[in-house]
Figure 1 (tube, helix red, strand yellow):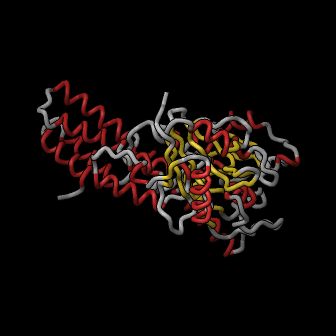
Figure 2 (tube, one colour):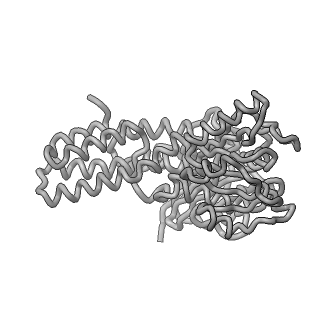
Figure 3 (cartoon, one colour):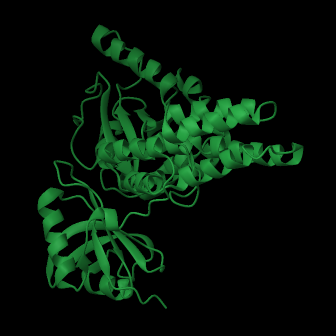
Length: 389
């Protein structure tokens, strides 16, 4: 049983940022959460949960709570410094000894350069999973693994040991897409014919009216971009011009921009009006055969005339049914997006993971050098951890 006193505090610095993370550690964390946290679905908090932090009957803020039953919990708020102060006061009154962030971080002593990069990421991120990822990196997950591989290289490894070290480097490089996505979020393009509800869907995912929505086809004539979080993971969403044959030069230019954006996007949500027969669209094959396409049958509130399973088999692409107007089906759509994104990879905290281009370059160079010159590979990993001399 954990008999440590209950301590806690804010891990993120005061400032203009809207997100803050609190960590509470010690005996009674579960009891504390049962007193101050109300999960949205009514169940006790476990792992990552959404809900509200409460002070009696008063709601303090919407929060995400991470509690794995290990005598430690993290509470992510998004209400800025006013809420930061209110949460700190609430924890103190609930019996938590509030301490500074330095007393709550786990510092392995490895990788000053990696920790600096994690601090930069922490300052930039606007999503809960990004906060948790960079906090984990700041506390040394990547540094510990890289240091262990480096030390193995410094001991004059034989062929078998070198092969083992190569596998560990390969494992780190295999997770690089996951880590880098937090700093360069995947781009999701919302595309399709006019008046299929693309802008309504984009607004639904963004949570506010960022895109102009009217019944008039062809309203959106340029790309409209916004950063957003889906299940706490960062993405950039682009709403686009409706794809159709047009004699309007302005609208035609918007269509060309949409086609160009589709070539660069990580994922494409191809939005169709599912309440009407699917039109014959000359550019459909070009979109369907791109990687990362999800077909979205919108306007399900009006009924559907298209069999989604038959369409998925015919197109060999995933199909989601939604009503962007009412919000139904969007949770399942987000699951499909996450499954096809870099975040499909390792869980945020379970695996060490490189997250910058510099780190990846050092790992790749060490991977090339390890078989012939373990000493050089060791030096490259020291550069990864500590920076260039």
